[in-house]
Length: 195
Image (cartoon, rainbow, N blue to C red; front, top):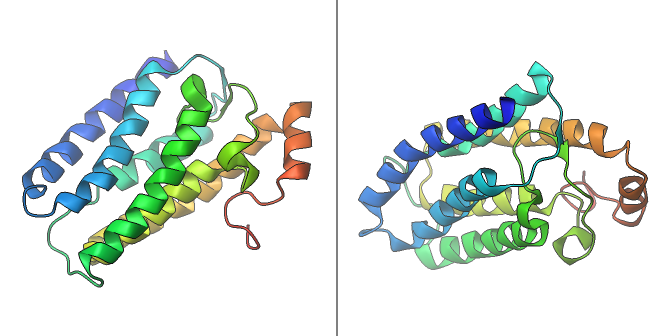
């Protein structure tokens, strides 16, 4: 039941996001990178394979809110802090990292913390959570393109929740010997040299 509730909420949150981006894409086509990255996550949630999910209210709420916050940003009402070629490049780098991580996970992707198998190599040789790193890089590129206090607030919330999600995911993953070995070979969770 929790699995279907999670999927329904993600789909419902993605609809206003898609509508807002569809309105500005003719004027700002480079923003399709962020929209595509966020929608890929929605599709992967819908087709993912089952796994042992953490069913605590805390784990569910941080996962849901961490997914919802980026879907609340809007591509209007902000100012550009960098040229579109720069913001497009940053968003593409972030999107390639998060898409690469998602493709590497295949159907092992989910919102709420679960052990759907331990993946190694590819982008996971860089950090243990490259998908979240890719999101943050893409979102920084977007903020440079459409800077507004509201977008900053939603991303600050999302990034704080991503850190909490990582810690929650690692609680369940650390019960798996394969993940313990992986965490020894890939030291950093999110940002090399920092966290």
